[in-house]
Amino acid sequence: MQTELAPEFQNTPDGREAEAILRKCVHCGFCTATCPTYQLLGDELDGPRGRIYLIKQVLEGKPPTRSTQMHLDRCLTCRNCESTCPSGVQYGNLVDIGRKIVDEKVPRAPMESATRWLLKEGLPSPLFGPAMKLGQSVRALLPAKLKAKVPAKQDAGAWPTRQHARKVLMLAGCVQPSMMPNINSATARVLDAAGIETVIAREAGCCGAVKFHLNDHEGGKAQMRANIDAWWPQVESGAVEAIVMNASGCGVTVREYGHMLKDDAAYAAKAARISALTRDLSELLPDLVKALKPRVKAPAGVVAYHPPCTLQHGQKLRGGVELNLRALGFDIQVARNESHLCCGSAGTYSVLQPELAYPLRDRKLGHLNQLQPTTIVSANIGCITHLQSGSETPVRHWVELLDAALAPAATSA
Image (cartoon, rainbow, N blue to C red; front, side):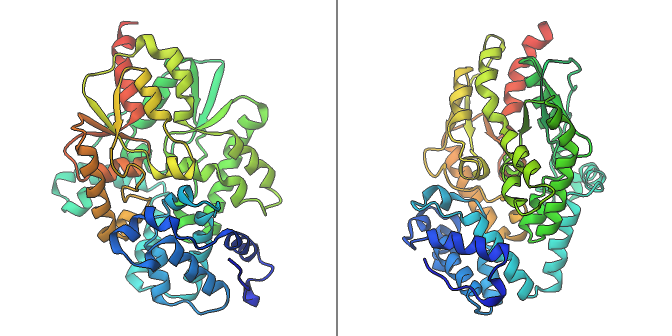
């Protein structure tokens, strides 16, 4: 697809990148078949092909409208279209550029702007933890919509204290320690049982995705640089073998630090190194299977697994969780239909676009419930929280399931 950039976008980093991405697009429409919002709404402009067309128009100088902004806002950035695209179009990067440009040109309503500001400033804030604690203390009194965003208080259990020669850094995350602290401690316990020590750099915070995807690219990049600074002493010294992510949404972002900071002379090389060292927790599963198989007592019953979009489409990691947990004795199954589709969580999407997010959630749960599971598992806190808000079946991170199956062996050791 050829485009002639308007003068204001010529010779800018965003303009050059967008133009290169657009050249790959042949406008075939394969992506439309796997786009969640197109399936719900049936509007060409609510599919990747239509959104690419809108972004192209803006880059060529056509003034964007509120309608342009709305169609770009409706995109989940699930990147299912990237898995489908035969031309390798980097749609996720293109839509980030398009949204930022449109937001600079199209004002939002005051309430909408305030909500977006609260999300991008509040979720990564140190005040989020106390606010979540307060919400959990009065959870029973909260309205249903708010209660769905405030999980019940969770006991994190003990953090392991043993030291090991093998060490990995882990990003604690911005909301996960407050909302579901057991995910991080379960990760540390499982890795400890396999002879791997988990190290947390206390200065590291939000991965940067919240601000970046709400069009505050500079704010997001500032958080990325802060994390690189926090991790760099351990990375430079070779003290850690990997940077492990147990939230796939954070993982896909950190894996792209090298791309996002490629034009930053001070951080480009460091960012590329960080991205190269980043691993999703599931990528350690082959080692965990070897080390832990004799100690795992998998419970009976079907475990339904929802692979997050950030894992299967963003990081292109498919099948590893199911394959390795089956090797450990779990009866883990993915939905027979639409296992590739988004659950509707998508970071802040379920707050900003509830009229689309909740039908996608219910559609996903309908397919998962056909498996008659005793537990539903996923690999990203957003997906877990969103699915749990519509299900009586427990929804957990798969590492919590593995940690619980190790507990009897750990107790008897």
